[in-house]
Length: 81
Picture 1 (spheres, rainbow, N blue to C red):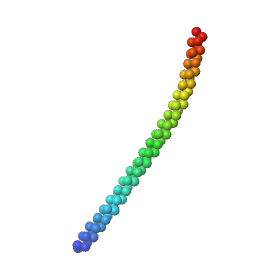
Picture 2 (picture 1 turned 120 degrees about the vertical axis):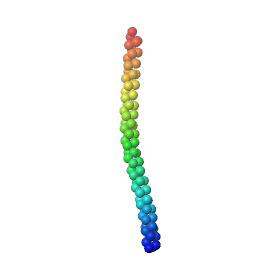
Picture 3 (picture 1 turned 90 degrees about the vertical axis):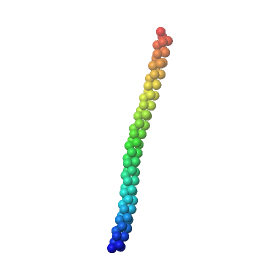
Picture 4 (picture 1 turned 180 degrees about the vertical axis):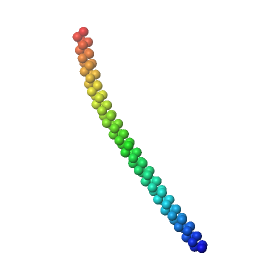
């Protein structure tokens, strides 16, 4: 009788610790998956923003060239007046 109780308690404790470790590992695995998904999303955002910055930089260069051209034309017109 006492042997059955001890055996039941030991079996229950072993099952609890094994289940606890398994549960803890599954939680950690879920956290890692979520972190990986977040990193992927952030990488896509960074890539998109980098492309936009590059496009805007090219646009600024074109606008600066246009401004220089207009200044030169403006100076010629001022000189002819």
